[in-house]
Length: 94
Image (cartoon, rainbow, N blue to C red; front, side, top):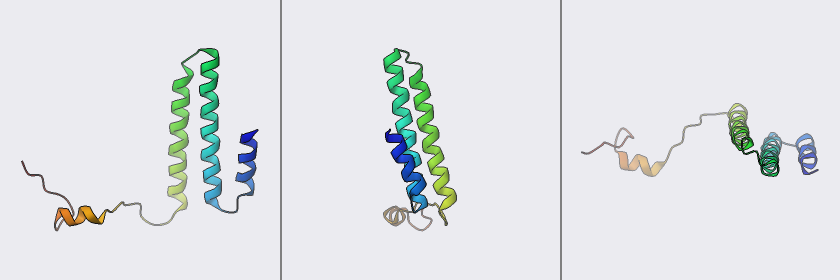
């Protein structure tokens, strides 16, 4: 029932970000359902399936955000650049 409410939000969501968040929420709910099924049937092989499903959902959301957001995805930390010197890379001292 809750998945249907989240799916409704995905359909009616005004922005793409709303739809991405709802797809992630549905993926999490399905993962929990797989884990509950594993517990109820005492078949713990489903746990591996749930982990793979959760990882695929996470990678799918990251890929979707990567395709939908413009610009570069380079992480810069100004504090690390100050420590590194000129090249931006810290020199290793043995």
